[in-house]
Figure (cartoon, one colour):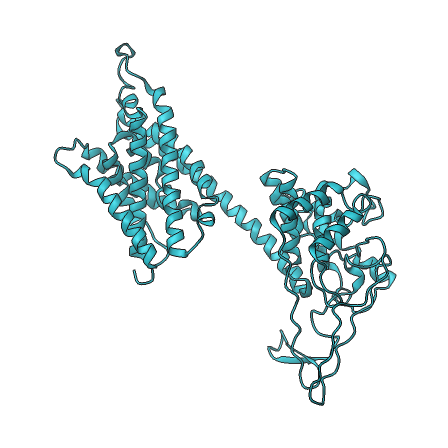
Length: 519
């Protein structure tokens, strides 16, 4: 308990005491508790809870979520104090992956008992227990039948999920110091969806338990739930593999062009902001996020000397750089889960007036995802600091996007980004810190092969900014004068020297993205 904050200790102790108060009435001699049913359900919860964690369910298999159908069956069959006792053995005997193990077992036991107690109380309050008990009584008796237990069962399942999510959020606030908004955000829906399915399975178990076939027939409701859990585990694995694939591709781009590290992630974030403002669905929002993150993947096929060239590109070199959307599309063409993101990777440099590349598409012929990523890419390029210029303020970048809307950018996407920025703001990246100079005025870097420090002459530092023709902030010819080399170190006591705030300005001209996008 020493590693647990005081607030968390008080919270957990309070939950344990409250759970004990809820379960104590079942131990009273006057309580009419069917102990054989309590023992069978508790043993079944232990077996069920020890089988499911072997599946790669991740965080979805925590606490009472392991044995939700069994806990709900106990909530439907037993009074609330006895239902709380059913949850205790499975919580105490279940595996714990993180320390402190004893505190986590105690907390999980209290949470499971309180959730089961609340679910049983809600089921009885809604008349579900009477309807379930009368389900085998002849209809002539006037007692409510099985269908009348459906609504209370759904309510009890929701109560189980809400109670579990609320208690878990509280321990995150007290133990990890999270804000209440972050602690409960997204947990409620994730807890309710599986418990609705568990509620139907638990009601089926309870009905079969009271049927002439007895408890053995109730076990038939569990194999389908195990199959569902297995399918969910496979989906979880596949999604994790997809995310790992995307992360690996982004890391490969960042390694090749490290000066713009983080650009891809920010373009993905801006694409999500635009998609949400346009009212797109969750799956499509995720697709556009991936499209923004992978839009510059084709840079892996561009020679590094061109990406890091200091001076203007020749027409031949520019043509090579402009192939990067097609390179990226070829790399991901066989990855089926990317879907619409592949079109965005290929066409995010197209222009509405048809003067873009690689295919010169115009207007509505440009895929919508590509139009979203084009605006997000240009916005981040303008608001990011480069070695040859300072970042533009967000309002200036928005005005530039509006000026080019209709000719280069889709006005709908520009308006959506503007509204999203007004609502949520934008965190501009910090400018890169220059490497320290040696006594000879050379940049000192680590050799990744030899594992030792090397000196590089000024202007030839690894990771230095690429050619200015590849940035969205280029002029109409696509060329900006390169940044002047750093001044040699002073040999006399330093004097106060005024440093210009920005690189030399280029003549104004229409917005024209370079071949390399925002990098």
